[in-house]
Length: 349
Image 1: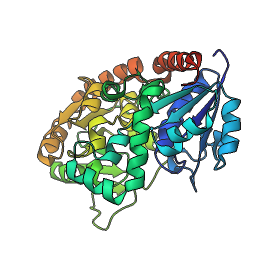
Image 2: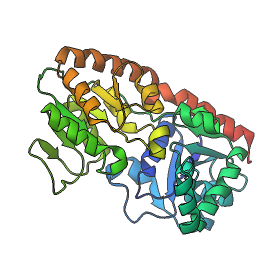
Image 3: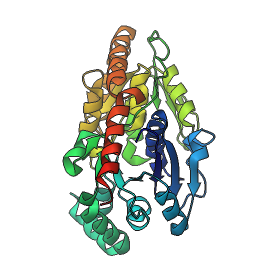
């Protein structure tokens, strides 16, 4: 595949699955491959990628016949997530074109309520069709080669680890303030732990910047900047002092998800604190601080420690070195290329 064509099938261009598609598109583009991104739905493109070069290669195509034609003109179809609108669609339209399945989140486990018997029963009753579809797709995962975003998913599904890759945009602002600003890139959803973060930042007496619209209980030390593009979010991270990923316990996604915003923070050389989940620990290594999920007191203690500019510089420099080694486009490109070439040479499943 020295100069080839790749078709990315993603379930919905309006949701955050498009973020993973952007990562794979960037890797393909860096190899000089032609890459199109197609979804069956998506009234509006996912906000963070609007206006980007990636957006120009995205299209909603509801007609499976047209997608089958695109697949026939491609060397490889990559299904972004094992969901009906991507993997299920690939199984229907790929024809003789090989399919590579990308799994970056525990989406099937979430739909099926894996490890949560009561929730699983409720979903089987209330969302019967969705659960049946997920079960069918789960049975077919082993028929095609797989790439995954982190080692936790690799243990479950096999395949090669292709983490979220970012271009190296250089280090952010120098750590100097003894009254640092904490940055949270994401939306205000319970499972993301923003409530814990808000309480910890208030107790530590620091400032907090959040990329979402302000709630009714907004506090004076909080700066709710509204939704941002990927570039705007990265710039906020570069200007900030501490980046926190406070994922909550008891959530399927927390146990096997590697947020791309962690990679952005590492590349920018920020001091980072993450909830104690394996994918976050794996990515961060020993270059940041880990705290008990859902525990605002533990997070407050970490924030108090990170007031020290010298410590923030030390951790940030280490995080950036690790990111340059593991998570840049240059670092990830070889394993992505080899996985794609192997899938193409293997042929249709």
